[in-house]
Image (cartoon, rainbow over all chains, first blue to last red; front, side, top):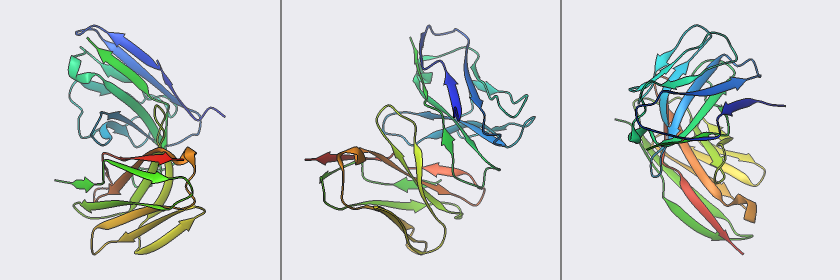
Length: 114
Length: 109
């Protein structure tokens, strides 16, 4: 049982570089989310998608973009990474829309921008 | 803005009981969630409360008072494996989840 898979697990990259974090789920969940988690702060929503073909902005979307071409995949792209984007990124999914609340998380991607 | 408050860190003894509090101020309310997150791992769902009262699930219970904007997570018969962070999240009127910073629970033998 895979659930939700993220790649890479960790990455160090230079400022200004482009980076895509991959997220794939095999649970046929409609909704998917990208969060970042920083020490001392709660999880902050970057972008979300309630269903394939649609995306929306969360609390901290600047500097990030997403796409949802199909149900299973929800990649997050940093067009030009900056040090403030150093964080742990979690992809999550839920069975229905944003109102179900119970989220299933991937194992996280630790990103360091130098 | 939305505000979710929970203690930063708590310490308890193996076999004892601990209560982790969460207070919230949000624009509307559509449920409160507790998640467990072990260090270096993903959060996992523990409980959901939308009506006032106590929900019990094994050694874990969660309580909600909507009028007071207050919830707690009660952990009984603590085990070393319960050492983790516990995240409180409140769903607002727009069905957006608002997360607290988490409470790190340290269990001592």
